[in-house]
Image (cartoon, rainbow, N blue to C red; front, side, top):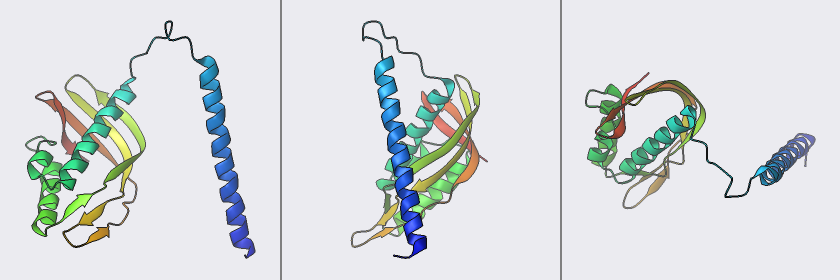
Length: 169
């Protein structure tokens, strides 16, 4: 083993040890701070947590639409006049026309900042990337390239009780 590889291995192992130590410390600290169930009160989710719940739910529904090649389900995730929706629907239709479904799409949210949140609108600045996607046909499965992280502002609006994407910039 050359010196470069040995140093990389040591750095990796030190990183893993640091993460495990931090996780164990957090678990221990949380266990000590936890109050008895009868006196513990759940605090409502923060604005950021609420926005992230919406985004994660939306991402999961989008992933399911791609996995089942369900254009109608995908269309329901966007406002009627959304150009982002038109582009996404066109992409899914191209996959479906070739007999492909896209499975395993996972969105890694690397950073998120709530710019606006009301009962009817939400605007988030998000840095994320797509991972794990595979194009699946009857005879073949091909791993799709991992997406690079990108930052965009996503505007959601509330329509008929659901959050839909109006605009992506």
